[in-house]
Amino acid sequence: MERIIARMLALGVAPNASQLRPAALGTDLPALLQADYAFELELVQLYLDAARHGARIGSRDDRIFFQDLLEEEQAHARDLIQWMQSLDRPIQDAPQRRIGR
Image 1 (tube, rainbow, N blue to C red):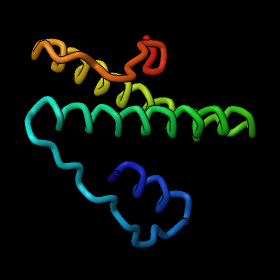
Image 2: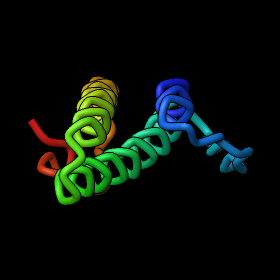
Image 3: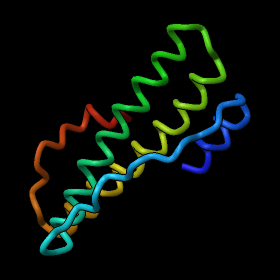
């Protein structure tokens, strides 16, 4: 979040207050990890779309910025998959192709 705000300020755009989504509740660690994984997949898609948009409009800096964020979120998603697998919990809707690598 800090990097996005810093990028906005560097571009001369003032970030406004945003409404945060409510925290996902789970009854146990696997449920919390599953909720976190679902959120990571949303971020992966968001940053993928943003990087593609940057490429489409010819903004190399924006494409690189969002590509870096995308790669970080893909790594987080892979880490969550490994953690859930270590708990012997099946992963719901976790196609590997959606997170890359």
